[in-house]
Image 1 (cartoon, helix red, strand yellow):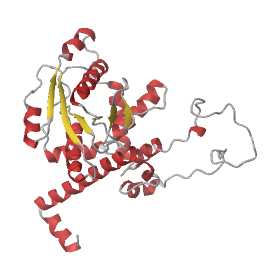
Image 2 (cartoon, rainbow, N blue to C red):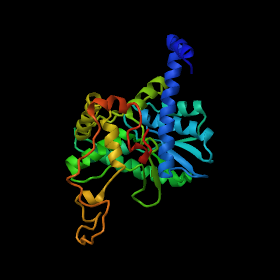
Image 3 (cartoon, rainbow, N blue to C red):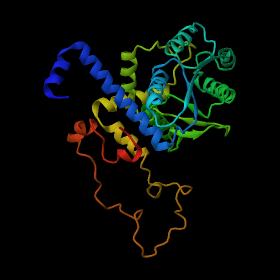
Image 4 (cartoon, rainbow, N blue to C red):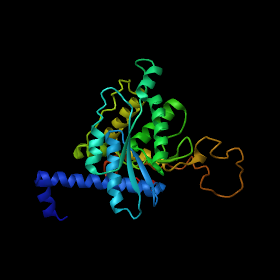
Length: 313
């Protein structure tokens, strides 16, 4: 686009809005495409079960996958699945109407897990953990019924970073949320195609596309306060230190077991000096190379060094 055309677009509110939407959509598609390629998430002939909750993340996931499906060099099918857990006030008509309007195959599964959870969890306590386990089991069953080869969830980059810090702060583990894994029953491959996508991009995209969002607080449960605190901290860092979250996510893709302290991941016990120089040797006194803070704003607008190793945008 030349300077004259750019000026014309920027001075026309409708054209500017469309230009920004196209740019945002391209960034999200690029992130999803990179994640799919890096982790071999989708293969020829796959049947992808997209778990649709009615929130911004799962709507965006479905929308991006449907767009990629049109231009992908491989053939795969998509079926959207929503679990109606019978929370009081759940608007049952919204998802079927939306899914019919876009012409995608779908199934609405009705299971009253709400009553089960409420009968077990004391009033005022968070129900998320038990609710999640029940939902997961049902979705695994439905995946088998539908012949799905992959189960796609809407977790994004910020969810993965939150989980990393939650495990560090409260669980004593260096553990995150992988973009691809085998389900706990060993029967399904679970994928997270939004793993490289920023929450703020997804939020903007959902607003522009005007997805019919269903709130996730219908159950009346208290929020997961630990996750909320960590999430607030990450959002604060993102505002005050642009580029920090990108660098943190890069670190998750560049793990050096020999410079941590887990003997299960690296054979510290049998280390011996053999006179051979090695990459994982002691470089503790080498000068570390960190980005100049004054350049962070520039770096945040383009790939940071090393991000290509894990396909981050």
